[in-house]
Length: 313
Image (cartoon, rainbow, N blue to C red):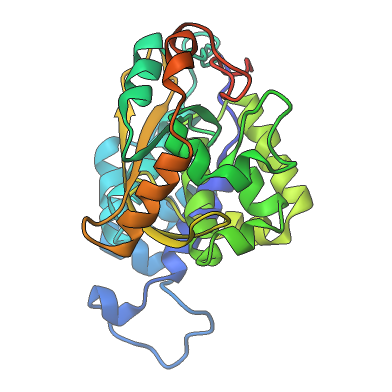
């Protein structure tokens, strides 16, 4: 049996943070005037989940291995977890179970040539692919133009690989580029927290979280909140150096990969008939690929593209 990663602290802090967000009246319990701390007490969660206080206390201390899915579902219901938080709790549970053999390291998968071709054919939406650590591993021309400040940032690697989390928290200029910086920062950390629940063995991810925690007090605060985000969609405002203020909607979907690698395709577009669409079209025209070199670019990756393979662990 291989020893599982010690994620008891993550389990403890996650459950305690969700418990602190609830009040007795939200779950139909009587309100006591002698409450010393906000949120529910452990014994109240135990009653709602149909388990003993001793059992729930042990669970909240991180002893989750061996707990059945049915009981976890009852705890998730008691704590009013949303779908993403529930997924995260079950991921933590699976990670805590002893494996019959040493857990294999996640194999990184190169972005398939067909995906690069697909990205290159998308011309009126900014399209990029990122992995679970929020590294950008493939883009079309418009996506690179749209996120030009990030790709030009000192936080981008010498090989041209940008990382949304590093840019957000380690480059002060990101606050000018993202007018809604606080919302974006919270979403970025929540995405990384969900990935950490899925892949506790990912050494590179742990190093990234350690780097950001050391260098950014804002990241440390958000990381400690244990908020989770799996779906990546919504509206984003950017202050672009070439076209000014632009508001875009974005959607993401998972691409099929080998092993447990995560490749997430994101598409940014503007509402038709708005000034934002005009600005996006202007940006696309300014950075349209030269048709004389397009055939070469399809075959040989240029220095302007991110690396086509991901780092090993």
